[in-house]
Each structure stands twice: as C-alpha cells, then as structure tokens.
Image 1 (tube, rainbow, N blue to C red):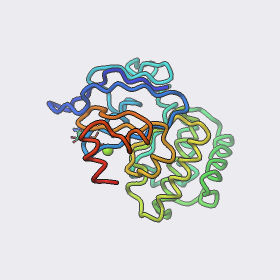
Image 2: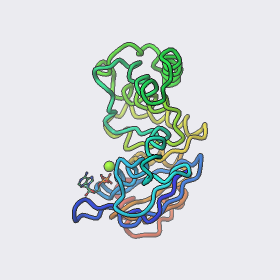
Image 3: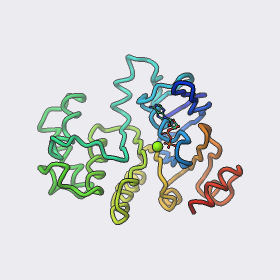
Image 4: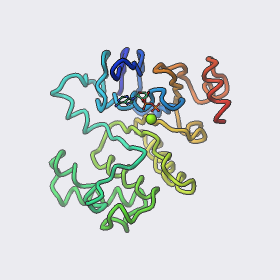
Length: 239
Ligand code: ADP
Ligand code: MG
C-alpha cells in the first residue's frame, strides 16, 4: 500500500530524513515512535506529499506521488489526522464532514449527509452534528476529525500524535475509535507516544531517530529486544 524508497528530505541545510526505506502492506498497522525532532512527522507527511521529498520515491496504492496528475487522486485516498484536529471552526460538525465529499468527491449533498451521519454515529457523536467545533471537548473534536477523514473513504489513514493534545481522560475514547478501525483492516500509520496502544494494536513498530529508521519489528521485538543503543535509551526514558 505504501512504499518509501530512499526518501530524503532537507529543510535548507538541515537534512531531516536521511534515507527512509519502508514497505507497508495493505491492512498493516504501523506505529512510529522516536524522540522529538527525529523526523516522525516529516516521514508521515511525505506519505501524502504534504512534504515533498528532496530525493527518493513515495508510492501509495501503486501511484508515484511525484506524478502531479496522480497527486490529487492519491490525496483523496490518504486520510490524515493531526494533533490539533484542524477542524474548520466556522462550520458545523456536519459541514466539516461533508465539505470535501461534496467539493472533492462530487458526492451529492443528501448522500454526503448520510455518510456523515453514519460516521458520526460510529464515533459516538450523532447528537453533535449541528454544533460548532468550539463547543466540543478535545476528545470529541478528534473523533470528529477522524470521522471527517473517513468520509472520504480513504485506503490509508495517517495519524500524527492524535492524542498528544488531549486531557488524559479523553485519550481512551480516541484510541478506541482507532482500534476499531485497525480491527476492520484499515491500513494505518500512527505517530504516537502511547506505548500501551502500540503494543495492543500495532503489527509493526518503527523507531525513528536522526532521520533514519533504527528499528523495525513487531511490538515485542522493538519493546522487549531492541537492537540499537539509542532505542534502548529512548525506551528507558519513556517506559
Ligand atoms: P518529529 O515529528 O519527530 O518531532 P519533525 O519531522 O517534525 O520531527 O521534524 C524533524 C526536523 O525537521 C526538526 O529539526 C524540525 O525542526 C525540522 N522541520 C520540520 N518541518 C520543518 C519545516 N517546515 N521547515 C524547517 N524545518 C522543519
Ligand atoms: Mg511530530
């Protein structure tokens, strides 16, 4: 579903990705961990070309993202959820969920509303369709953001620290929605510090440091038998 081939990314003279090679199968759930500033978000953002690599190749669902003709199509297939929700504040929850369906997918309004309402039900927020994001808790906002991404019927979902901005009591409700997606076979790439979630849900865990993947294995391989000293040091600080 996703292939990164020797992906490098520099911001000015700062090379933040130093050759990322990664193959993610359909249905895999991959969790990316690593220190702050190590390049986790940048790796994730290359997977929909929010960051264009300086060199190397990104292929999603068989399409090379450097092909400008394919980029818009690929982007509709790759949903993304951010730490800070990025909901449109001047639109209701329902409008947040229907906007791209109507404008990008060209779904008619009635069908878009139906899809939106089903997804709100799924994330437990049917009663919030007509409110504005301001009136929601962080956990509710993030569930709306996930529903909005799902409304595009993506083949891949990318999550960049989806629970980092939440009060602790709201983390679980968001992780539960993500777990149900994983159980249904969604291909997911998740940057998170929630190690319990990683152990429970991930097929694979990647440890990224200094713009390189230093560890790539099952949760038990990475957490219980890490190979690099930097992984051991990182885990000793957070576990
Ligand atoms: P992480 O998500 O692991 O914390 P990032 O991928 O956000 O790390 O950032 C990796 C490095 O790239 C950091 O040094 C960061 O300052 C730098 N960086 C990220 N985005 C930009 C940008 N748009 N412009 C300049 N530097 C950036
Ligand atoms: Mg980040």
